[in-house]
Amino acid sequence: MAGTRDTALPKGFRSAELGWPELRRIPHPPYRVPLIGDAVGTNLRTPLQDSLRVGRRLGPIFRRKGFGKEIVFVWGAELTGELADESRFAKHVGLGVANLRPVAGDGLFTAYNHEPNWQLAHDVLAPGFSREAMEGYHAMMLGVAARLTGHWDSEQAAGRAVDVPGDMTKLTLETIARTGFGHDFDSFERARPHPFVTAMVGALSYAQRLNVVPAPVAPVLMRRAGLRNRADVAYLNRTVDAVVETRRHGPAGDGDLLDRMLETAHPETGERLTPENVRRQVITFLIAGHETTSGALSFALHHLARHPEIAARARAEVDRVWGDTAEPAYDQVARLRYVRRVLDESLRLWPTAPAFAREARQDTVLGGVHPMRRGAWALVLMPLLHRDPDAWGPDTERFDPDRFEPAAVRARPAHTFKPFGTGARACIGRQFALHEATLVLGLLLRRYELLPDPAYRLRVAERLTLMPEGLTLNLRRRSPAQAVAPEVPEAREAPSASRCPVTGAGE
Image 1: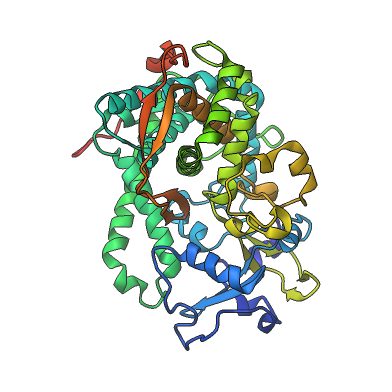
Image 2 (image 1 turned 120 degrees about the vertical axis):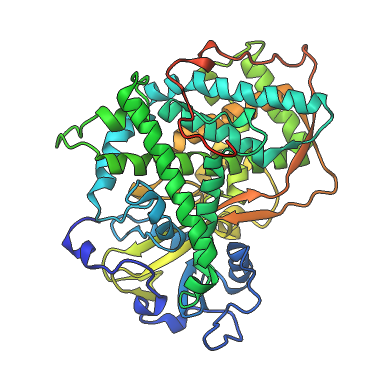
């Protein structure tokens, strides 16, 4: 949505009454209180899950208001299908996404539609996710996965349960850092999370809190948090700048994403990314490239542990497709069709990027009932969209990977499964994330039996992305006759991978 008309749209939060002339037609929770609105009883730690509970009661389009901010939510399959129409709607950068702009600026995820750097970066980086590029990343993914299994072997031998979200975060951060930027954060060698991870989590949590704290009192209530956030952002910037400078003045990479950012000109205009934009894109990929995939893997492992019959079926597929090969080839990962269905079903129930916003390109009417002015926007709640009984049937809470058999997928309406967003601004790294996650699930299923804690009940933590909180698993190693251990590739200590150049207390 480029051009002068887009520039004229105000940026920042726009309350629903500014864009929905017939807002009264949209239901809202009862007992709305002046000033506070519908915020009574809302848990500030779980605003998304509160909205899911409200949405189940009020239907496929509803609204909530708190401290002067009113938002229209959508989850019905039909209405989402309309919002996915690129001729009528575009990505809306609002809520927590806009709150991340101090971190990521006009990066791919946080850019406004009219900002030219989005299209420039997209066109320059898209070849970095081609099949040829993905095949090049595969060996590095195997190397990082071997570090994970080495750590899990040690924990299992010591009789300790593994910290699933923590270890998946280490895995996915190292994978995107190595494949994208030739960098190594030494996550598995550290007793505590790398400071970069701590700063990222802090920035994401701060952005989430800004969504629910009343704007007039936010500077007072969040003064200390704001100071901490500025320090976090400064640390992220320093770390990435050091990584980029090391590449500029050191050996080139292997054609990774950072090489493309530094050396590739736009194929038509010849334009290159500025140093500031390179930094923003690196931060975008490090955040988006690890945070969502680690959550998807964690939820998938939770469900596999809770459904041993599904885990056995997935494990049998891995044994059949991979055989006794120590390291599966790139093409063998795509042949794990049932494992991929397990991943998709996990993303259906808990899409780790749980919402996306869409704004009207021009004045229009949604669902033939609700007029929207140009720039009016709605937030699509994917956990409810993925549970719409009209599209998925009456048992939507049940974990069933067979929902993604080809015949079942063809029978469902379009736009009912959106874990990577929609349209021109959908996730550029989708195939990267799916390949990585399928590979890792296959390796873990082949190597271990997953044993859940019987007392654990799923708790979902919210920090813009979703993650199972406090999830641990016990492991039982499969015998050598059952599984072949992956070897650590020689490339693990490749000279192109730089160690963290920013050091200090606690690192």
